[in-house]
Length: 296
Ligand SMILES: NC(=O)c1ccc[n+]([C@@H]2O[C@H](COP(=O)([O-])OP(=O)(O)OC[C@H]3O[C@@H](n4cnc5c(N)ncnc54)[C@H](OP(=O)(O)O)[C@@H]3O)[C@@H](O)[C@H]2O)c1
Image (cartoon, rainbow, N blue to C red; front, side, top):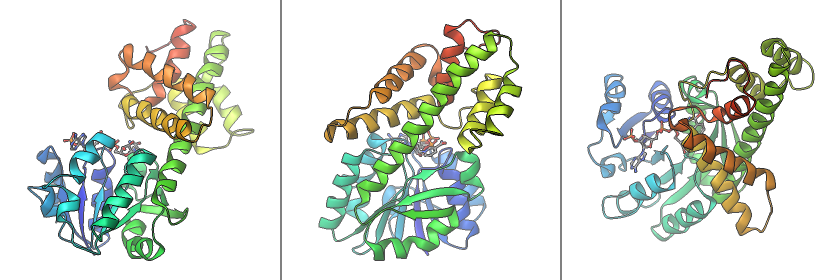
């Protein structure tokens, strides 16, 4: 397919590379143009403006947050003003339910198609085309995107015709991951301070009650208190909890654990967390406990 790709950060760079590897004709755009260079060397076309990435069958966005996506989508230079009727905007960033609703309505008014397809998986999974994709939109639009989604992920889960549902599912997934990180951080601070080897403790947990990728991956980072480099930045993690709480407020669903996590992220960002991975909220428990080897 002929596809534009906008947003070449930790995730987008690997995803765009996999579209190229899958034989698609890819035009890439990034606010900081230097990040497009490696992809252009591998055969991508460079877009100077957003509009140049909107001339194909579809355009994928993988941007930091609502503000970034808003600035790329709306306005005379944006996606809506430049995408052909019938072409598809595939929004893969983790954004708010409210913005997804607005995008679905705006693209429909412009006779364009809109598919929400946020992802689970960190930059390593993005580079290895191992993402889990949560897709929602008109079935024929999701069908039309399949060759692109298959090039970027190991599996696509369809969650219905309404794009914002995919965004809600993604946000609740990140709420669960952050909850696991916080819980692991507290448990490891306790056993660590009691002198138990954190690595052995993690082996025990992940080979018995918690043999889950989230516990293995983040448990390893917490056992080592290693929160750099930031594969998923703390500020983006904070954003996801904020967006989950916003969706919960709209539906009047109390999420006390979500509120606690939100405060944990604010504390982390106030204590040098900007440059760290979001799993560094677990470092707060170690710091609070004055555990040996605490990294914050
Ligand atoms: N990292 C993960 O593990 C992970 C996993 C699943 C989902 N996600 C989600 O995927 C999305 C991208 O994450 P990431 O880790 O790739 O983030 P990232 O490395 O920070 O990249 C963010 C991208 O957004 C662009 N951007 C930021 N603000 C902008 C603005 N105001 N105008 C235009 N472009 C702007 C950046 O451009 P510049 O290069 O110019 O800064 C960059 O291309 C986020 O929604 C995140 O929540 C991330």
